[in-house]
Length: 317
Image 1 (spheres, helix red, strand yellow):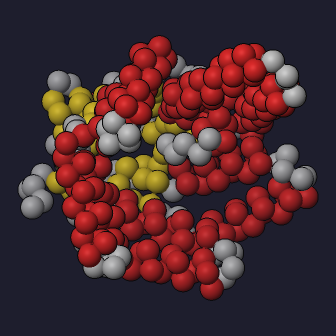
Image 2 (cartoon, helix red, strand yellow):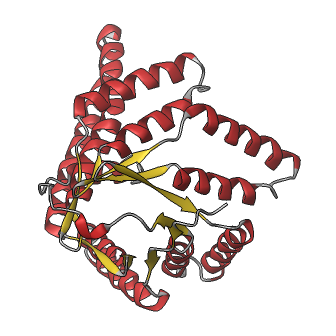
């Protein structure tokens, strides 16, 4: 049930045709430059999406540049090439102890790159995001996140993957709670037990209904993430809330699938716009949050290598 204080304060104003134009130019330039244009294409895409994401009718802005992203991309690719080089050397090494020790070191390094990429990507992406001149920021501690990730990873490993539901929620709660919106602080109240029960119900009913319940499960997951999101300002906590009905979510998925398949993926930009407009259009925010009193408190962070690491290992922000 929606609270009397919850209002539609977020929306996406972009259109499929304009975003399609951005995507086509990006695609052609990326192909023409044999992939080198990718960082500039990503910057153009983010600038468009952010500029058309509105809070209280004011747009967000992405201040990152293709040059910054290219520098990060080059560093990220360099690290992965180094790891592959080490693997190749180990593959031709005749000494078994060296090979086993080296493979273990590479494996641990690769695992460590995930939380490091997450930390650096959040630092860069959020510091390059602003709204009404107020920068967002991330104040998480790299070593704390690294310890949390490995502790949760070990528990997931020894429980044969069962603990992964708690791991996901604990890491999400840590990272979200260290996000700043100027002088306001974000928060997340989800927990592993509730998330596990939601997923258990989703797995079971989706299997029994031959996939049909998947629409309800996807909607419920979206609602769970949104409904557990908070923002604290001036000592008061305000909540977000989802009003997404299952029929809207089902039509979004079916429509996007048809768009992408029938256009041989050329309709992907239109699907992205449909998704942004639908999901943001069903996110409510407490009207008592006064965004006019938010103050600029965050510094600018311009090292984008974590952003590109996150792309390479497929981490989503």
